[in-house]
Length: 465
Image (cartoon, rainbow, N blue to C red; front, side):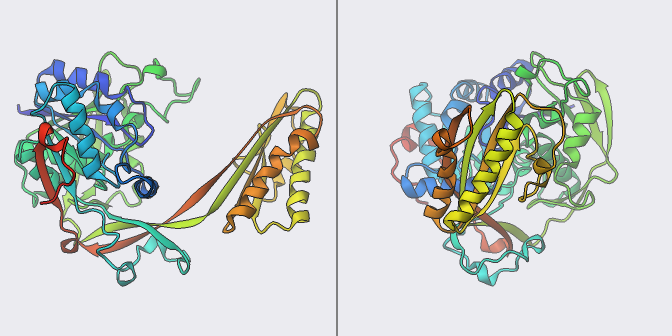
């Protein structure tokens, strides 16, 4: 039976940088045709990358890209295991040059690197002429300034990159499942109208896209849902057969677990309609899906159905929002609860007294925070056990940068103006990003693929067609 292995080396920007090492080691050891992909983009990650690119035209890609690839690139090239990733973020060409320089440093001048562009539609499409995604109709965008607009592209340009012999495929805003569909479609020669096969690829990508979420990450709950060696949790590997069989597993020398619970949780993750999980390549239907434990850390899935792909692509646009100011300070020891409540009241009174135009809330971390409201109803009414310490957090939001900064700095002032035993103050100010989704006809989003050897790309100043 012809089996292809798909490994995942990262589920978001900020994931563990050593995660791909055991995955690559396992792919090499098994000796089967394989690919490794990285999914490092969230909807706001691209906007933050665009802001970084504004500051430096050679930045704007995944900041940990070199750390992620350096331990696995030599094995990938030597064993013909292509690496794919949307780690190009807002600047795939610059990311491609970084990978090329890394390859040269590792003595891999013939490493072929593909750069896929076209997802960035910030300047090419007028958003006000596009239909708004139904989930975002209520947002007020009248004064918002556009930061970025990126279409979710599918697997076809990634397949073209692999067809041209790419060892590393650098892309921007691809759909998450496309990163798995592409190497499968390339290897098996799947047609992009074979909805049943593409459905298997989409399910594979969806299960693997968040890295360790399918191998016990987020799932584990000590004493309730334990997993072995969570400090060494393994990232997933999928086994896919030419007939469409799908098995989820992980490297043997890692912690975590793959069982019916972890797989079912991830399969349902972010599926608003299990009968219609819309991707650029296929609409996945999992309503007839069945999962079976077929061995230790091995779960097989079958019964996925596919329907024709949509005529439109999703475009996520990010806009400059308001400012977020945060300040934190701690109180500890006897009477900590009373001191924390008094501090929170002082912060509210100070903002009102100064007339700062902000929306603010105070949380007492360790007493009430996650489930509280802006008025602090839970911490005000708390009558539980006396906590040994409390972390007081002020969050302020508004359009006036200076006002938000001044609000957050009120926490810093508590080092001398606060209660007895107040310490550990910090504050920061960050811009907020507002997102809105649109739909665009796919023919309005042409993509481009450039493939070059590392020795050529490393010194390139542009990747013009």
